[in-house]
Image (tube, rainbow, N blue to C red; front, side, top):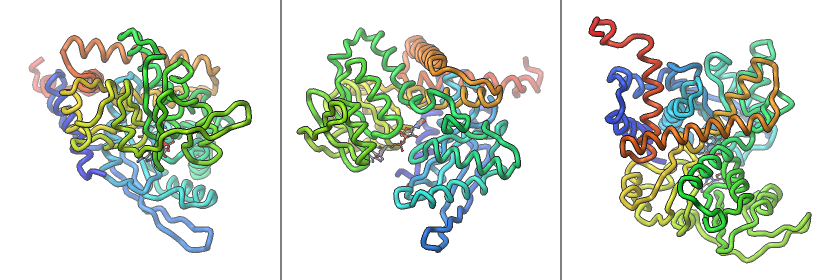
Length: 429
Ligand code: NAD
């Protein structure tokens, strides 16, 4: 993991600022997080011993509303990474027009090494440490890598016990019976799918002729693969942390999802009813998967997967960034030179935070929506945001990422300016 991931994120801000009318003083504020909290998270292990894990919660900016962002449990979690992820959340919320600023949290832990009871104790202990930093009008966490709906449910329960009142709107991505929203589970993958559908219209693609590879087969990766497969796209490469598989004629995605659930591995299988058989597929490394000659590459795992080192070898025509920060800024320039289109993370994976916003609205109003309503509203939001970014790209002759940042900067700049700028206070306007 690059130690300079936050600096790398800032370099993109600098590039976009040249194209935006945002006030310089606003830019300066965006380069620094509003609040950084580092905590130690003690957990009683099953064998009776006590372990202490390092955790973070960082609020980047709250000009547009309370802060929002996921919680990650991963051995690589560190301050710089959480800071970059919080920063990206601010721009993501702004580009899709939802009234939040960005935040992120995480615990440096290998969750796969914990028992279920240890995982629950860790989740509760982390919330106990950050409880004064979060709240429905302050900062609202959600799931991220290796955290899921059940973890969110434990966290909401712990927060409610601390506050001595049921507070579902403190966290999103909860199980449905605990106040979760229908349509939240697949929202990130679905949001990316709606972006691809806009690309399909723009480029008059025939899905049956479009090949796709997906790196990372967790929540986000599985859903985008499933939805594209249902439309006829050919998913030829899939990987997870243990490696990848390739099949030229394309995989039967639902079968692979079923096997991944059962065996915790990505295996090439074909299922008919409940009968599944392993089929011949080439085993490939994650690096090979990234370098496949496909129409669409969907990185859905972690950041910094495509860097200056492997960017020259990327053969995909379009990259849809479902993961946060999978392409670093050095790689950006190389890919652009090679004519590779990138649908940037702050747009492509915004579906999750959009439906998290719907969940928060439902928790606060006490009225719950049908799944169809969630899908329809998400589709409108993603399609409108995609078109807004595309219009900016064409108007200013930018790449998609810079165009998305300029759209976000315009929205953030308006909120900051509404509170007064140097020009206003020195009576120059
Ligand atoms: P997840 O934990 O459900 O899945 C992560 C997947 O990545 C797993 O299949 C894991 O095996 C795989 N993986 C881990 N390391 C890998 C590696 N080195 N190479 C290939 N695969 C690897 O996580 P998720 O929620 O699907 O998140 C994936 C990405 O999407 C992250 O970057 C996350 O920040 C981003 N994201 C998620 C959401 C959401 O709502 N879940 C929203 C926005 C963005």
